[in-house]
Length: 466
Ligand code: FAD
Ligand code: NAI
Image 1: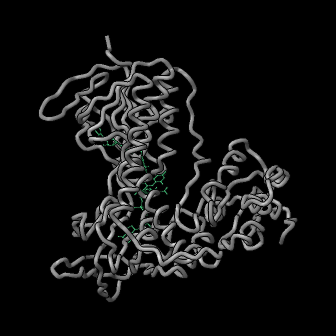
Image 2: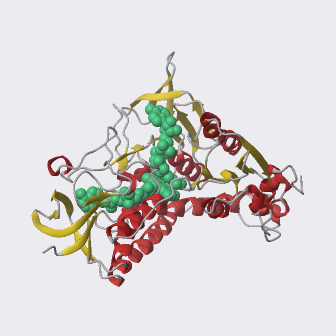
Image 3: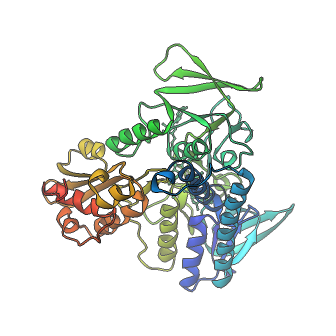
């Protein structure tokens, strides 16, 4: 007889949410976690600490640059970095405690240690040289991801850092060199730039934020450059000389050519993340991986080994906390015999910079490539009343609708609070709504969300304020 109905390995947003949903469905559940704290990458060294620092650094910047024009006179703000780091840690601790509470509330056993799958229904949990074998009807692998490394460039988390080190620097670097113009580079680059660092971003491709709509990314780059970011696109860092007081990075054009040297106090390597399966014993247990090292699953999250499932960053798809959470819910429901499901066409993505960038559904590039006829409606925040009075008019909303049916296929926003505004598009798309549906939905005035309605009206060439 199995002791548990379900053992979840990993307590990130995928794992802990899966455990809670399974407990709600009446299963006897345990989670296994090798870290000292619950919550995974997201709560400890990902979403939460980065958002705390983004918020605090934005306030610092606003106090220094935006207050005066609104008639709020303050003396020049001073940075107390240890206090800002305490603010960050307080936020992390609160969220981690929240997960501990949820485990208790749902009577989920927390087993501290490294989980290894011995076969169907058997998980070994090892900690401090001791191990025990747990029996269970089902296993969910939710072990997440780890940083991708650059060959020949060793991360010491002091001068050459990953996102983890960049969330805990003990002083503001004079010069910060960022390798990779993806989400982490632009978010953490924003944090340190606001606090006083000179930021140069080296990106392999000829654009920033690959995967996001090209027009949005172009405008975003211009705005970041106006803020003071420098970009070196179509270039790669091939070596970092750590022998001197200042780091010396060798930068080569991606297409080949003469190398140049850039000096920096800190180099942040953020070129993506890789699935994390170390120590899980997958090969021996017979759990297949795909060619990119991700746990291979079928459409119901089942791996090649009976009774073993996988979700989150360790499987294919966008490496996002909310994608992991939704998969956690879906797999718990499937195990309980229900019809758990994730709609991969409607997974929003947000970059939490100023302005924010958000996106759901297809980009123009994807629609062109797929040969799908579409109509575009755009509306700039310069024509939105609330944005005008607040003097935060950077950015625009773009709605892409099917040329034949008017069904909304994608929505892309750059602008303040874009990360909140995207969700009306998600709900609309989840229900297969049209641009006309969005355009005819009453939006409160004055809100920035009116720009979403106006962009939908613009699909039919009848925006009111433009
Ligand atoms: P994880 O959160 O990585 O959790 C996996 C857990 O499994 C870890 O706690 C690990 O210790 C544990 N584990 C691994 N192997 C074992 C084992 N053998 N035994 C026991 N335990 C094990 N996403 C967003 O959606 N929004 C954001 O704003 C955002 N910001 C981010 C900022 C940064 C700097 C980073 C690095 C990531 C960010 N992400 C963000 C991505 C997000 O953190 C991940 O998509 C998310 O954490 C994935 O959840 P998961 O449950 O799959 O895995
Ligand atoms: P990313 O995939 O977003 O960006 C990596 C960038 O590095 C790409 O632009 C890529 O072209 C570039 N690159 C790759 N190799 C390079 C090289 N050798 N030289 C120069 N550039 C190179 O990855 P990132 O920023 O590391 O983030 C990892 C994951 O974490 C992302 O997949 C993201 O989903 C998640 N994340 C999500 C956040 C959010 O939702 N707001 C915030 C932070 C991370």
